[in-house]
Length: 413
Ligand SMILES: Cc1cc2nc3c(=O)[nH]c(=O)nc-3n(C[C@H](O)[C@H](O)[C@H](O)COP(=O)(O)OP(=O)(O)OC[C@H]3O[C@@H](n4cnc5c(N)ncnc54)[C@H](O)[C@@H]3O)c2cc1C
Image (tube, rainbow, N blue to C red; front, side, top):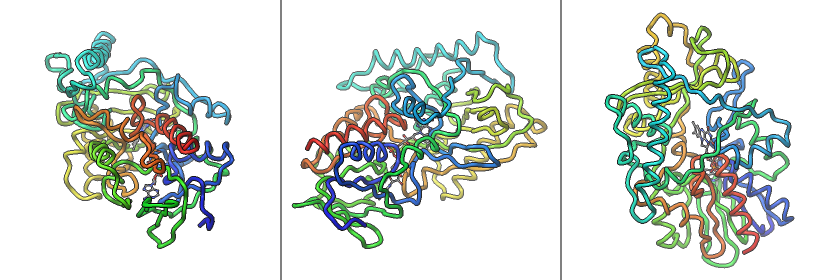
């Protein structure tokens, strides 16, 4: 642990923390990063299974045109590929004709436009209130909007939903987590350093860790997920002011997990990285990213209401997610076609004490919690992460931009 008083301490080595650390390195100040886990990347983490890079967290480079990780990836020589622009849509295992898929796409766009039109920051409604009526398709579309947001549509602010930038998607070859890990090379990161208390009562801030160690820093950038902060895992002395405490309390954890399967004789096109949608119901649905990097690995996406409503233990949650994924695939393609599926990994970000959810959602009327949490506290505490990004929340690119913003504010302060 550093013995001197640091100019800046950074809590967390995910996308936001790494971006903040790189900005501090560039500015030439004294700084260090303190990370609870034994690795970098946080909710962006690539593992290798039988030689295939598998993203257990972030995989899509969302808002690609304005995502800072796209040019940084290019600089590292990472191949960044376009996402296919047509999404196959399946009903009971049958690929739908182009008109049906276009109808689905139209419904997505209509929801976004209605959310934009209906919701303002001061008069917010839920995404549920913006759904177009599409007969027996409505429930399925409602569930999928919730799946990609990680909560039921009734619980999501339409204002927050609609203000997300729409700027295309790309994929980095070799995994998003691996790219972000490379961007952390050479940074002074202390692993296994779980902050448990930040004393900002006077003089330099004192950060105490679970193992009894402590460091002093003039300013602290806090990038631990808001759900971790809500749990009280990091205490503040004195407690955070009312405005920040209320902003923090406003967020809801999103549930979104990857059930990673190997499906050698999968019926999906060999093109690779193909998002595939299914017609499900209001309570249960999945989506699939088929043939990752043209391999026989697939990510079944399970989440939203299906998982936020689940009340069992951590291990029961993983079994539930696995069974939901396999159950839906079997329902669509039959036992014969799905018999060969091998489940190789089920993520559980919801139960992980270092994340406690996949990203953060704001309920109707609470979207401005993101801006509120951007405000420096006492000129010494600076919050950053996907949760503080108003227009790229829930993404690794948004977290990166927020880490850079918080570092600039801390460097200026
Ligand atoms: C399954 C899944 C799929 C996703 N898909 C995408 C996608 O395709 N594209 C996309 O852009 N985003 C996606 N996301 C979201 C994206 O991963 C996150 O928004 C982003 O990685 C968050 O970065 P962050 O720096 O804010 O937080 P994190 O990455 O969570 O970093 C915070 C760090 O703080 C550490 N920490 C926690 N507590 C403490 C403590 N007490 N002391 C010290 N350190 C602590 C954590 O270990 C972690 O390393 C996905 C997430 C999940 C879970």
